[in-house]
Image (cartoon, rainbow, N blue to C red):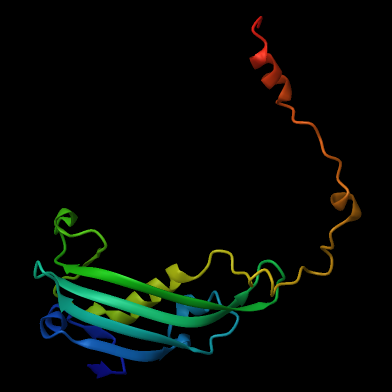
Length: 175
């Protein structure tokens, strides 16, 4: 097992042959595309890579990541701390390999002769893990001051179902 720092580029097939595990923490500020969506770039991303070979001798890479990010809650418009995590399982293949030969559960990652950019992969997965609409949990969130529920919505009049006429027509054998 190798502990931090996570190297920026690796040859995943060689690491899979040796059964290497890489773990470490990276500053959130290293991921510029993710930081564009955040209110604060302070914090760390905890990352673990496990390289191995499966039963079919395919190079496999498992990625686990977790972090906490700060984004604007779209319900109350205050800053929210949102936990982000994910586990991913990749089959490392040569470009052009058919995906039909792999067991389900693998994401196919095509890697040619050039080294794999681990930092770009982490950033891509972080981006995909971010919520589309960030919000606090409902019990922690307060509505903005201008959005107080009005009296008319509390005492709303119940309306009849407009399709009840169709239900009556359906029951009538003469129609």
